[in-house]
Amino acid sequence: MAKLPVVMPLHVLSHPLGAHVLTHLRDKTTKPALFRTLSYQISLLLALEATRDLATHEKAIETPMEPTVGRVLAKPLVVVPILRAGLGMLQPFHDVFPDVSVGYVGLERDHHTAVARSYYCKLPPLAGARVIVVDPMLATGGSAAQAVTVVKAAGGTEVVFVCIVASPEGVAVMAAAHPEVAVYTGALDRALNARKYILPGLGDFGDRLYGT
Ligand code: PRP
Ligand code: URA
Image (cartoon, rainbow, N blue to C red):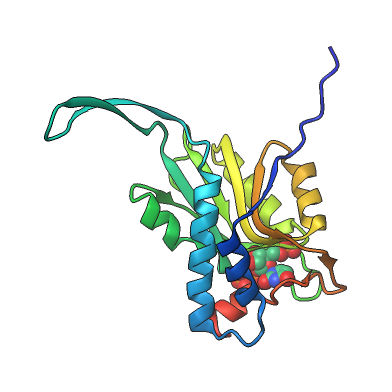
């Protein structure tokens, strides 16, 4: 039987608060302190979307009133922010999933070629876990595709990618490199400019987050 091509699932956030927060993130007059708060808020919404399908299993407990059966998460959760801008998306995952483990992949785009260079990697055990790779900007897709490759090489089998703004080019690169990896984004923007920045985008996320 012919093998059907796997089409990468793309989830674009559809929530009035998400649209509101994103507009203020895009606004060039937004200062780093507010930018960090807005990053937290939209990442929280995205964290909930990207975990909507997490497996659960039954657990018998006793309330103060009587025995009952509830449900708890069936698998460990690992979040992997791509340094440095991905750190701006980490806290909401900690807040919603206190038992989450965290790994780090350090990648930096060359200012001229826009090709990402790896400078750091530290990952917890990934076998059997849902691994959520986070990076606010999916531009050429080079950083995200490289990070997911690293995560898979380290044993990650159930991987999703979460970003705040994606370009069509970045989505296409992810679909080609990792067709089974679902992408969750706050927005799908129009295009990349000649310097490989997203349009309309929000500029350099790391610089705006850290005031550099
Ligand atoms: C930015 C962003 C992504 C990458 C996206 O990081 O946070 O990691 O660019 O671009 P791509 O899809 O074309 O690879 P940058 O390399 O500027 O580093 P930073 O996070 O340290 O600011
Ligand atoms: N990295 C960013 O921070 N912004 C872009 O638009 C592209 C890459």
